[in-house]
Every structure is written in structure tokens, then in C-alpha cells.
Image (tube, rainbow, N blue to C red; front, side, top):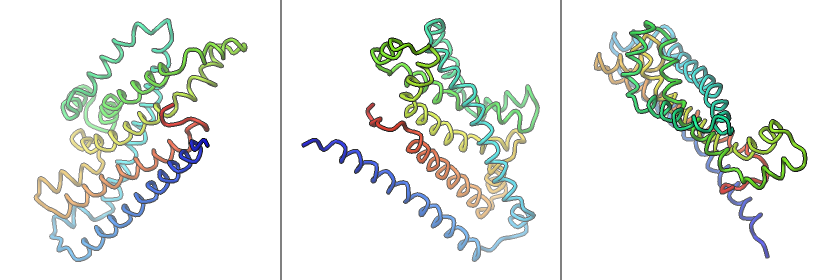
Length: 256
């Protein structure tokens, strides 16, 4: 008796159960933080750092930095990955990967400092730095996902009359979706973390609260900025997990 479908369904149920635990944890974390703040004694410096809608402003700036940078990462890395797996440009793959590796190997704060010197302070320099830092996982996973496709399957698709574009959009990309989404998930979490450094270039974000708490030695401000950053990273990772489940083509197993 073949038990593979049942095993696949069981793995799916476990995955969905795990996905429901994270929102509960985030609610508990934020509730505990709120209760702690209610009884915490804030001095004038802490109140000034947290008043006037500055927390919501920093959180919104952080979300904005993450969303915009991720959009540009996808626009750059996925088409580049597709082009680099085509026969005419395959020789350029090592060079492109070397550049992408260099971008991520460079310390993020050093990269941001160079961009600020070149472009000046503001969100533009921060966004470019975040994009450069997060291109590698999406680019490498796109290339790996497309290269992992079974050549005989692609030949069969061409044999039934599909054009090159049809093979790419209807066979290659759907089969590569799991690996591409894994790269996007990694890039999202990287972007949330790297966006905290945007404050050093005048880009705002939750890093403002963290640096204010550190420089002024105000623990409530530091704790709030850190917890909101962690919560945002976990939430983004959870949403990406949902996308992986929902966008994975039907019938694909984890091991392809």
C-alpha cells in the first residue's frame, strides 16, 4: 500500500500547525512588552524619545525601507538569474555571482558609509545599501532553481511545440518556485535587520530608537526598538512561509 500521499498531507498539516504558533508568540511578546512599559518609570529623555508618534513613525519607516528594498531586489535578482541561466549569458554567471558575493561580504555599515559619502544622507543611500546586501540569496536561488530542472522534462516541453518563452514561464519557473521563494524569504529577513543601520545614514527606521537607547543609556527605548525589530523580522518570515505554501505548485514535493 502506497502511503506517500498520506505522508505528504501529514507534513502539510505539521507545517500549518507550526505557522499558527508564531502569531500567538508575537501577540504574547508584544503584550508582555506593553505590560512592562505600563509599569516602567520613564524619565524625560525616554518620554521625549517615545512621544509624539515617534515610535509609529520609526516603525513605518522601517516597514517602508523593507518593502521598497525587497521590491528592487526582486526586480533586479530574479530577471538577472533568469538571464544568467540562458545559454548566451551562462559564461557571465561566475562574474555576476562574484559581484553579488562582494556586496554581501562587505560590512553593511561600511557599505552604507561609502554610499552616504557618495549620495549624501537620506533614504536613497540606505535603500541602495540594503538592496546590494540582499541581492545574493535571491540571485543564487533563482540560478540554482532553474539549473536544477530536469533537462529531459525541458526537452519534452520543447518537443510538444512550446516556445522558449513558454518553456520558461510554464515549466522552468514553476518548478523553480520553491527555491526562489526560499531566497526571497532570506532576503526579507536580511532587509529587516539591515534596515536598522539606515539611521546612521539619516534613513530613519527602528534603528533610531536602538541608537537613542544606547547613546543615552535608556533601557526602555533600547528594549522597545529591539523588540519591535525582532517582532517585525519574525512577522516577515511568517508571511514568507505562508507565501511558500500558497505559491508552491501543486504536486511538488520538498525534494522536487
